[in-house]
Length: 418
Image 1 (cartoon, rainbow, N blue to C red):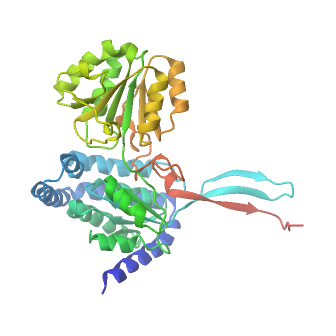
Image 2 (image 1 turned 30 degrees about the horizontal axis):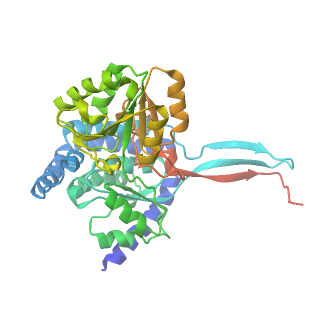
Image 3 (image 1 turned 90 degrees about the vertical axis):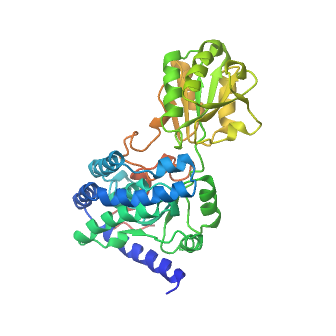
């Protein structure tokens, strides 16, 4: 049997399973999700053993520390994963919701109903948690999902997927509703990306190289999430203590994730007060700093920022720093260098906070809150299937509603068009 035939058959089976999912009631889907959460906890020893194999390979292959952090599963992380699945079960089901039901002059009623997208291909690298998150979100929104994890997380992803598929089988649901592509070879991925007749959407999560590869080769629509160059702007009206807390949490809590801060902008009017404190704190956290000529004097071991420095997603304990002359220059810098992910302003000036929210059009815009909250779970979505930096269809963390579309419904009483 050829690789091509295997991928085509897998996609066809997922399409068939999607029709069964679309008919499930909200209570039936919630029952499945709760069983999956319990199954993840019960299978913890097997999943951790599989993850240990992936981690050993990662160390042997000198996988970047940020990637290893994303790859690592612990008992606590698996408990969080199960809890996220339970949270998704508790969320309102968007499928079948009707809005804008309005009468037309001829008496017909016109509205819109939310429906599943159909089949979603989820392509990811060293993120085994995506297997459960994507499976749960797609199930609740009535979509079948094809999971293509990277080579780095293959054993972990297969172990998690086995739990989800077993629950489907136990409840007489076609296990192809959560399908796994066990071969991480790029040739197999290329075949998957050609299946526009059976797959409705591709969502890649991983490094910029993977996402560009998928976007360039896919015949299927792609939701893009290239990178997270997230900014923190310390305004002249900032509370210094709040600003320092936002800086350290955003940069040092988990530097290898896409909602970590990569650039610090400081208003020149507060630079003398804020930067010495920030420099000391960043040095204590062993953060490597790349500075503009106005900020470098505040740091002992900083390096001068190169021309491309402010376009860098470090995903490590490193960041860029720039002193800006005013609010307008901070906005201009963000507009030039932002990846459209998350931007934060620290200020006690309500009018300036409102201006920041209005003029900055990244997917998530925050006032006096850590960039680390730019996450589906933290924003009330239960979990996220990805963070879209494309403005079409979905923008920002993608939860249940982002995995549906709308169809028009028309109700009449025998009207004909004249």
